[in-house]
Image (cartoon, rainbow, N blue to C red; front, side, top):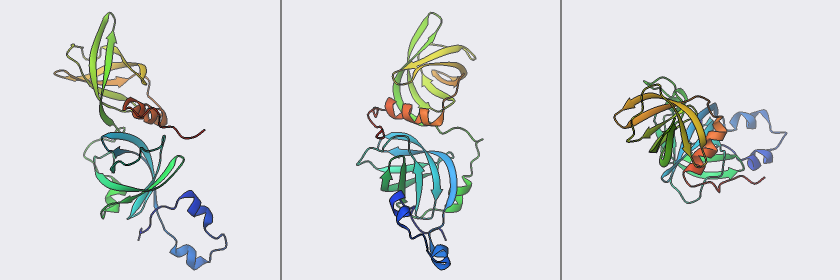
Length: 214
C-alpha cells in the first residue's frame, strides 16, 4: 500500500541511519513518476514535475515558489485533476496531500485517447503577431514548450511564419499550424526548456516576483 505523504527534506534527513530492516520495510513507499504536470493555483496555472506519488499525496519539483492562500489542484497530461493541500515547501520541492481518495493506478498509467503532448498552461494574456509588415494584436489562450493557441481578428495563412511577442516571453519565431475561424494554433520553431517555460508562464500571469532565494 502507498499510504504516506512524501517526506520533506528535513524529515528525511532526520531518519535514523541505523534503522532496522523491519523499520525500513515499514517506511513509506512511493511510485517514482518524473512526469510533467501543472498545478492550478486559484485562477493561475503553473508548470511542475511530479517526482513521486502515494495514495495520499505527491511530491513535486517547482521552478518558483507557490503563492500562498490559494486553492490547489494537480492536472495531469490527460486532463485528470486532483484537489490538493500544500503540506510543505522547501526551495524547489513541495509535498502535497490529496483532498479526497484517488485511484493511484490511474495516476501512474495516465490513460488518454490523445497522443502524448506537452503540458499546456491555459490563461489569457495580450500578445502580438508580426509577419512582414503586418503587426496584429491577439490574445493568448494557452502555451506549452512547443507552441501556443491564440485568437486574432487578423487573418493568417496555414504555414505562415510569424513572430509571437509578449512581455516576459520576448519574441518567438513560430509557424501557423492550424486555423479555426479567428483561433490559431502556432508551433514554435525553437522549443523551450521546461524550467524556462515554467518561469515564463508564472511571469505572464503576473507572478514575476516569485523567485527562489539565491
